[in-house]
Image 1 (cartoon, helix red, strand yellow):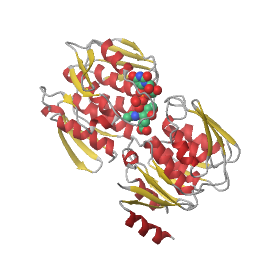
Image 2 (tube, helix red, strand yellow):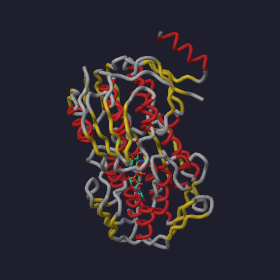
Image 3 (tube, helix red, strand yellow):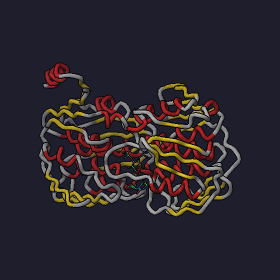
Image 4 (spheres, helix red, strand yellow):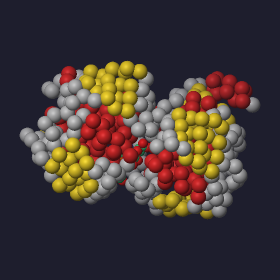
Length: 433
Ligand code: EPZ
């Protein structure tokens, strides 16, 4: 089983280029089947989640072609209308499989998709997705074998008030509504940059969506959508991960291909604890030397501090002086990495949905296991800051959301390798000792 082996206490220094946003790409790839024409999508991150979703889209009968590693052509014209069922072992592992519910329902008025998987960070129900589909006139059932079936004779635009601010349901309802009769309003909509990116993609196909990025999205149904060429925005969370990596290792990293506006919540918090954050048009330089200060953070929907940066920030704050508090207001079970960090010397106490952090001078290397995608990235950050050597198992979670993570870290001077067995691990240890 492949794992990372890392030798820490090397300040990371240099430049890193951020890939396309995974959580925008997943919605956009699914949305591409809303037209029979070809869609060319650029800046697709080459990560497990996008590969799995593209495999599922191809299994539906769509024509999927990698033009290059980050550019994909999708043509939904060849989808088999008698086979609108997505259910294989891969698709059950990712959360974004549910986006095929919205796009297939919107295009074909029928969809059958295995219930979504994804990181175990909480209950993650799909009741708001179902509420939106039913409001548009669909009948939605969960059938044996853990599949969701959605079907409609017709889809009629409606006024939908979301009980919860949810990224997935906001994107899914947008996709189900773009070809519906009349006007749909989504109130209390999520405002993340990837919601705006999916809306911009759909509008480039001829959809009529206004207000994405605010909490009220207005959609006027159109007759048909046409093919498009579109480039996905940079990944806010990959960028934030490298920003916290620069601070935790007391390094100096220029993070390129970012939209600084999307990074504001992260940039301001890192500045607040004493890091130097310099914004340019499409890049951000983050530097830190000496010990950072403590702070308080509460994760919130965008533009608040993103939940997907909570583990990475906690790992950084656990090295600050003084006491910090992080409150996780989005998911119920997103502190599983705390036990792993404790084995490296961190002092964090989880009380309800808050982590009470007492800063320590440093971490010591340990053998760790990644519990989920962003917690795994946080453990890599901790290992890069730690004294000594660490290993991280279950890196499959990390590979779902970060492209060439170890390669990018090595390019910054980090000592990290993927090893497949004890022999390779020993070779690394000899090489770095
Ligand atoms: C998306 O998950 C992202 N995943 C997550 O990123 C991210 O953490 C999350 O949005 C919040 O920003 C993808 O885009 C593939 P939600 P999603 O629906 O859509 C509750 C990562 O690390 N809820 O916004 O599943 C839910 O339980 C991943 O890249 C309902 O109650 O998140 C949660 O408490 C992890 N009913 C809250 O809303 C519903 O029908 C936010 O969930 C849907 C959600």
